[in-house]
Structures are given as structure tokens and as C-alpha cells.
Image (cartoon, rainbow, N blue to C red):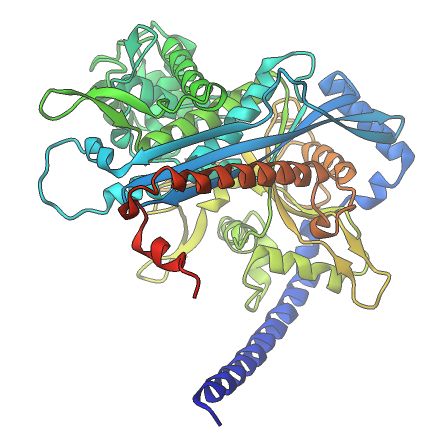
Length: 607
């Protein structure tokens, strides 16, 4: 037997052993999941089929939608992105773009019709940025001269630029669609991303933003503008900002937004939020260093005007980058360490700031125009529901019955857990979903300290994703029981922006608050719906709209909303076209063989 055959046989044997062990583990975890479902988890599953299959039920739901949106002819847009990067020996070419599929959903006496619309020639459906960045210019990102220090910062600054540009394109396309026209502005925006995850991923220390001094509209971006931008959004209905420790500066800025010219009264703020004045004094000192106000609490800037300026600043850069296709949009002039005015490329931290501003602006315009903003996340490997949420519910007593249960190890991810449920319960029919829980449970979790005591904590103990803003759930839109083993589409994560007109506090169907208070976190009160018996109108509207937009016509996208699949087609087509353009750009550099990397040159030889 040859050596190659020995290797192949050994690999086959190892694969068989691994497969058998995996199947055994899966069987054990599914058994634990079935027991957990029978004891508790079934109360967390919301069945929509019975209501949606009734013409009377659908008509009542359509009346409810019309009452709040003012129409039964809902305009929608689904947005997906694409990106690519091509690295040469001394040049990096990247692009990021987004594509929108637009249509109309007409609701009529319990029935519905979906019609897709072509974009007119004067509308640019795609948002594309395609910018070559020479590595030779990256040294200008450094705040000082050559120090002969080893660092990975330059590579880190450009490693994810293409994905950041793609996110920026998706967000700007959504904002542009909502605000561009009142006639065909969407009532519903679907995005192939998790808005709360985007907000969490671009959170960073404000001192890392290098855009301070960027000239725009007769002045420059300041540290105060950046501090005010990161304090958004503010919403008194949902209690944003909250009493948690990391929100102390935001509570002061929120008071300035209400009365921009009045001196800050720390005692009043402390009383409203139930916090100590000493912690607010520290926050005031931090804001004074940023130039927002002075040490006495007198405002140095008008925070409303500052936030308006930053939004216009964002719109200007995105317009140049995506609409005007300006290759210099990611550059600006700044003075280097030696006092020389130089062109400066935006770093990864600068792009994070733009994405953060864009997402906050998208939230604001969605509230102002009553736009339903949904994010659909496929193939997630998270455990926010089965571990983080239930762990906090156990620790806080939100679900006291969990304390009496002995739960064995559950499947590895939320998606695996939920996709097993239809096998346990024949009554589950699509569409169905879990109860909604706060996106803050991405970071809130149950943990054990050194002495074995359990408590609720955040990332590094005190960092928490913004609560009372986005709600998460897991849902399924295709399930067939025609055969012995049910055929089903994937369970997807669904995320929606809370809307004051759908989710007002104090109403009969409002979400429940889960009070959490620790020395590190302060006081946090994320939202969740306690069980399937508590009516959740916002989720019901969302599941109805998504179910009628999920036709299951495409075999490769079963259980996935059709508009997002069409947006994916458009984004991929755009990506292929731009990709060919990038590949053809290598001919421009062919006169210099050293422009290609060694790997590219070697792999191009066909042997």
C-alpha cells in the first residue's frame, strides 16, 4: 500500500471516529433540549399560525397596521451589502457597496399582494465606494515620525476597511431611502445585518477617533462633537439613557439636549436617574475635558447644534463617497507631528465613528418617520437566548421556575436548539418565534466569581450593549410535515427597533422590565416579554409582514424573506462586476512586476 493510501485510510478512520463522537454528543444534547422544552421552554415559543390563517385575524391585524402607519399600501426596501479587497505589494484596492430591492406590499381585507418596483433612471439604487490606498501613504496615519517600532496597527487599520465601507453603504442607503422622498419612502426596511451588533462592534474609546480637526461647513469637527454623537440616541419614552454606570456622561448630555443653554443641575439629574452626585461630578469633569461644558456645568457648545452638525458631516462624506464616487472622500488634510499640512487617510477607527453616527441617525429617522426597521441574521452561532437571557432570568428571578429545574447541557447554539423544537412538538407550525428579549443580552450574562457566587455581569464587568433599543427573537418561516421527518428552513435571528407607537411602556401589552443592579453595572433594566401568553403587538406585526414576504419560491433561500434574497442577488451581481474591474486593474501595474505579491506571481503560473 502506498504512503498516500495510508494517509487517506488514516483520515477516513479519524473522520469516522469524530463523526460517531459528534452524533453521540448531539443525541445527548437533543435529549436534554427535549426535557427542557417540556418543562419550561414551550412557554417561550409564540405560535402565529392560528391567527395568521384566519381571514378575520389577518384583517384585524391589517386594521391595526393601518391605524399606526396610516396606510395599507406599505412601501418596503430590503438592503444587502457586498465587499472585496485586493492586495498588491504596495497597493491595497478595496470596495464596499450595498444594493436595495424595492417593492410594495398591499394589505386588503385580510389578503395581500406583493409587487416589486424598478428603480427609475434618476435614482442610484447602489451605493458603491471603490478606493485604492497606497501603503506608502499609511505612514501619515501615525501621529509622529519614524520611531523604528514594530507594530501591527497599520495592517489592522486596513484589514477590515472593505467590510466597514460595506456597512457604511448599507446604512447610508437605508437613511437615503427613508429621507429622500415622502411619496415612495419605505414604511418597512429590511437589512441583512444585526443593528445592535453593529452598534456594539463600533463602540470604542473616543480618543481613538482621528477625525478631530476635519474641516467641514466653516468649522472643524471637535472632541465635543464626538462626545455628543456617542451619547445618542436619547428617548424619554424608553428611558434612554439609563442609570447604568457607563451612561453617566450621557445623562448629562441628555439634560443639555432638553435645555441646551441652561447650566447643568447635577442634583436634579441624580434625583431623576437615582444615582449619586459624586459619579455625575466625575462624568462632568470628563465632559469638560472634551469641551462640552466647563467645570461649573455651563455649556460650552449647543449640543443640539453639535449633533445636527455631526449628522450633516456624516451625510456629506457618504454623499461624496457613494453618490459622487469621489476617491478622495476618505482623505482629509491635517497637521502632522512636524507642523506640516498633509493628506491623511481615514483609519479603521475613523470609519467606526462614521458607522456609529450613521446607525444612530438611522434610528432617529426611523422613529421620526414611523419606519419599521428589521434586521435578519442568518447562520448565527450565538447563545444570547439559551445561555445569556435564561442565565439572567434565573439569577434575577424573572423566571423563578428555572430555579427548580435541573437542565443538562443544551445544544451548542441557539439556532441548533430552536431547529430541534419542531421535532419535539408536532403542534409547532410556521410561522413561529421565540419571545422577544433585549439586545442588551448580547453582553449581559450570568457569571461566577472567585468565591463561587453567581451574579449578573457585562463585558469586563461593566460594559453593556444599549438596552431598551432593539429586541431579538428567533423565528422560522418554513416547515413541512408531509414526510416522516419534518422538512424545514433554517431558524433565523430577527431583530427589530422598538417603536414608541407599538411598544409604549405602561400599556397592557408593553414589555416587562428586568431590574438588575450591581456595583459594577449600576442599575440596568432591559426588556423582555415574559412568555407567549403576553401579547406582543410589535412582534406580531413583524412576524406577519415577514411571513407574507417569505414566499419560499427559491430552493436556495427556503424560510428567508424574498426581498432580502433579491437584494442579495443584486449585491452579488454588483460585486462580481466590480470584482472583474479590480482584477483588470492589475494590467495597469503589469509594467512593474514587483507590484504583485510573490504569492500572486507564483500562483499565476499554470503547472
